[in-house]
Image 1 (cartoon, helix red, strand yellow):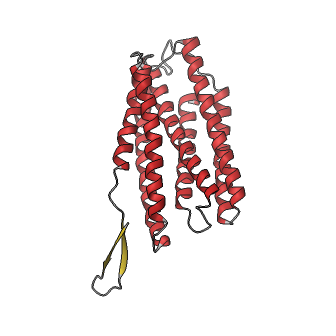
Image 2 (spheres, rainbow, N blue to C red):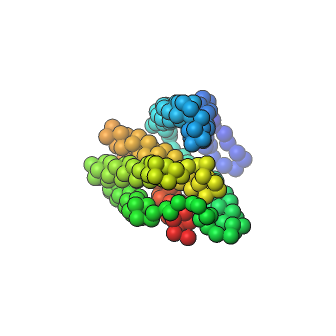
Image 3 (tube, helix red, strand yellow):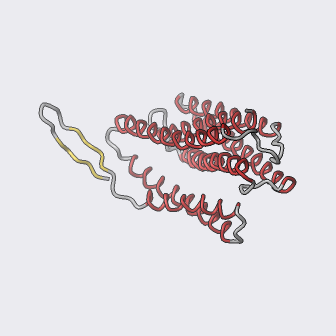
Length: 267
């Protein structure tokens, strides 16, 4: 970590935090790139190449996330003005979530544009998509937002043990949601032969829900890292930006799912 002192005209000295160059962001981006490629190859039935790329991308993504997080933890621990840095990091997080919302917005725009030009939706021959289990999964995911908020409030009040408990419950609820989605995918493929290649409806269904599932999996990893840091005593009521980042990301993912549920299953 390095700092740069400067003195603009008429202003006092400030310490501007300049982080050391890191290869972790590049490595993480390349690892994440393997995930959609592996997913598409798997859905298209290209043999063993797809699952291998998917597994390799998943393992590398987790390793890079943990490596980058470790370097950031060491770096931020010595920041001289944590409140000021927190403010700018929160601004950066908001911009990141806006960019994520734009990506999902493109999915929704394409979906509704396609539906507008189809005489009927779902198209003729598409399987019936049951709404019972997805509705239960939706309630579970919404409940996880509540438990995550309870965890954050507990941390702000200095109750670290309760924060750990509610964070762990949030992780469990997220895993259960993923299990529901995996069960639905397996059921549709086994009994209806419904896959990513099943016309426009299949492409939309698996692309949109699968992309969201990838975000849920990423959120679970972030929450797991936060939970371990809580156990290590890294957070206190004033210094816990990583906790806030994971919390905001999780709430964002949950909010997107509400729109997905109404778009894919109900409308």
